[in-house]
Image (tube, helix red, strand yellow):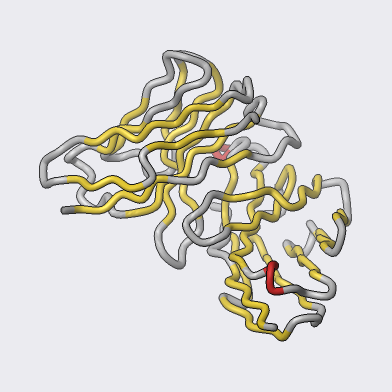
Length: 115
Length: 115
């Protein structure tokens, strides 16, 4: 079945450590997104990528980095500069970005906590 | 800056009741509006997408309406069932400006349908 796979499901970060969240899709979608969800809040956009080797900052990019070397993969690194990383992280994709009426497909998320 | 608000924050109803969830947005320059369902600890599942030129969309027991000029959308659920219990989020796809193509999410309505 086509879909988005996020791993791991749970992740713990030590002080000063960088951690990387994996997002893989087999939907052949061009556009991919990373969101952060905090309790009682809506999703906030961290980074997005419209095509391989290109990505743009979202609304809350500070303390995060991404890469897009392959169409199917869009890993997110939470760096030690992100002082409040505890949250639920969601990866999504669409066939194309920008003006389109295609709904976003989501993975099942990674829950990141501080040790 | 686009802001999306959902009312109520939580709703508890007996099985079989018809219910309405509300979503309002501050900037009417939208491309589309989407309703999503989120089960605990999971990603988002797209329920309905209404294009800016449309007034409503229907899928089974769900009906979503859009009044772009007044900045409002409603999600109507008919004959609610315990399996409908979840968090429902609305999101608008912004048109133009620096928010081109991005989704802005509301904080969600937590729905509980009890037998």
